[in-house]
Image 1 (tube, rainbow, N blue to C red):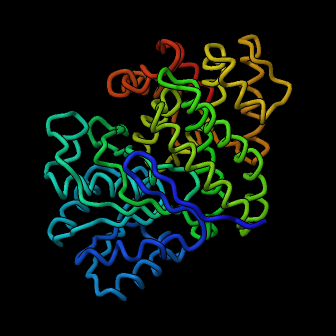
Image 2 (image 1 turned 120 degrees about the vertical axis):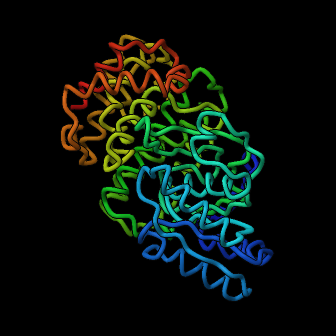
Length: 386
């Protein structure tokens, strides 16, 4: 089938979706004299996106520098280093080339480069967002959704946890979703990032701020993930599978822009903040099945609408909460996911620390869940993932 290209507007972002989307914004890049590029160590180069960007910038005589030090679950000091480099370079705009960690880092860099301060100033509200440099977000995964929403996540050194920021100044000016750039994703990242998108959709659909609009796009995201993720894992160069997974990720990113992730993401942010080697999507997959049991009991009709695409025999009744939990777990196992928190060094004695940190610093996320989250719920969710 023909894979169409299109443009949508969401929040303050204009998103270009489809093959060779970057070519359509070359005139925008040519407006700037100095652009700072934020990437991770190798993904931007391997995907081909970095070469494409440099070709455009060189063609128009735009000066640029590249920061390639972003790591998964980026620590605040890395973000601040990139911010200082961008400021010293005199950047007029920022280009992010990467997945969620890179785009989130670039969002915060765009703010600090314009407004000054440190990451914690914005996390704890001691400094106001005054604006941001224009950001062009070139997405390399089908999981983040960050290329089309106002969120960013940073890992704090003290307290050691990931903390989410949300502000209108962090909408990218332009988002680029080109499925060609996802063809180089390795197997594990194909799995992890798609699972991230899946939980974006699931949590957005049942959060306190959800709506029929969110439910509609969240269901569309789940349908495409269930259909195309197994194919992408079997056939990593299947461009059609990558296209529809990228589409699903984009929809899921918009869904949390209008609703928010909550229970599962809040706990996972603590875990991958403690151990930044824990891939975000893997952490979600470990926590998700048990958490879904509680969420399904509270919002059976909404979650049934999504999860029926995994298990058609599910009923929109709280009595099927355990069955919904098992459906998610079996779906993930069928994709080859069988990791546990113990693989990343977590033990029973860490649970109290996770509960305390989640309650103290991620309570804003827990408050968006459709149920009251008590300590025993967090304990069961984390314990079941060990």
